[in-house]
Length: 136
Image (tube, rainbow, N blue to C red):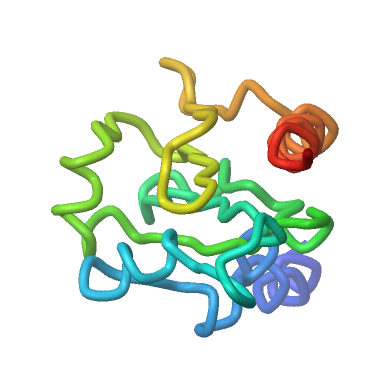
C-alpha cells in the first residue's frame, strides 16, 4: 500500500489546471489588463474574465479556463491584489468577473461551500451574450 501512495504523490502536487505565469496579474497590472482595447477602438475587443483565486481554496479553482472562447483570461491571487479585491468587493474565492472595456458585466462567485456555482457552459454563455450585445 505504501508504494501506491508514493506513486500518487507526484500527481497530487499539481492543483487543478496549472495556469502559466503570463495569465497571472496583480494590482499593478490589473486596470491595464481589464481595459484592453484593440485596433482603433472598434467594438471588436474581447471581454476579459478575471478569476480571483486563493491558495486555501485552490481545489475549487476554475479548472476549465483554457476551454473558454472569445475571451481573455487572467487569474489573480487575492493575497497579492488587495486593491482589486477591495474595489470589486470580492469576498469569496473563486470569484469570476467578466469585464468588457473595463466595465464589470457579469460576476460568478463561490457560495458558502466555497464552490463556484457555474460551470463552463454557463460562463461561456455569459461571454457569448456580452459579445453579441456589443455587436451592432
